[in-house]
Image (cartoon, one colour):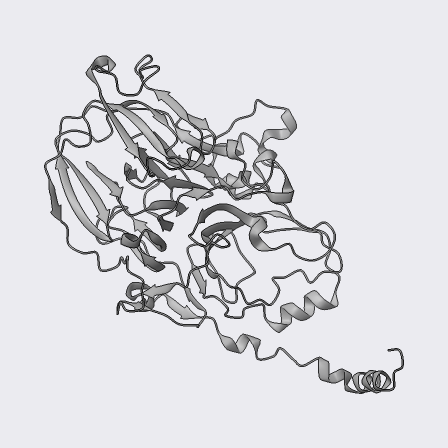
Length: 488
């Protein structure tokens, strides 16, 4: 069991079985964030939050008074159609020193050849293949300064952001802070998963501290800056277009389980007043643009609304599973989902495979041989994961397109079939994740031509022996009895 003292050290959180373990059975005051997290937060997913850095700033009973206190400007972010149903309507009101419109225009930035936004096969810069592909961890640059934005590299995706339907998967590999520079993704919402090194993210709504083992949702259109308190950092990103991340429905699970809404944390208002040049980088249609202004973009004194960034600690995920026989479908591992225009299939799911008990009786325990309607892209945050066909290290990527068969080697099959497995804990000190989509994904030039790319070796299945033929005589006898109308 982890202790409060050891959990002051960030790597110790990778050893816990579940967040509840560090609460020591109620023997200590409970705490909601890791001990080295410097910020305060508001709990809840999809809540209508209110936050004031200066008390009494937000007008009551209205949003846009003739005069806001302290001479602040009221600015609304409307993220959905004005007439969207109340449960789906996303917006926020910000009360700031200067509105976002106070800038000096836009200029085009050079294309980043390692990013992509158009994934239709007509685009010659993307590739499609049924081969099971994988990538060793991408290196973090060491000979040049690369921040979060310039360190973006696209792996695969589907659709196009200008169509407001699709997704892109990226990695980032950065070694320096964003200095006097902010980023706005006008294309879509980003789910960021640090794998190495923490991210100190300054947003218009307040700061977020996100470490390996945690995730952060950065909504479309908000401005943020990423600093690297631990030095070089690497991680994964799932960007979605035309949709927002939601908690999956729980169905027969009832009211609780999987990722609980109260464990998501939104920032608290914190403003800065800096009279100096800033660059705001916008991503629109996969292209990059620059805008300059002579004041900080993080001058929001107070805000309220339900369109906000948030973070979540994956060690708080409440796993569920079979307590009798057989595997439950992998939807039980879903942390977040995003809807598509197909009512029966999501645009994207984010699933994790974290420490849990495996107890099913009379059940083949490894991942079963499978063909799946979804495209699957996997990554490993820390630890080890035995469900892949190749060596799989933290920072690696594995990809399987829809309906391509996959499963373990014969040695694993035989061992799991011959000996009844014990009740055991699996995935100890490990978190792997999967991006799953109903869409067919194409691979970018960057990923296709990378020296890190390799293929799952088909020879690993060559010794999947024909056990059925060993029972030839028994089978023929049974068929003969059936032909004679006898019981078999």
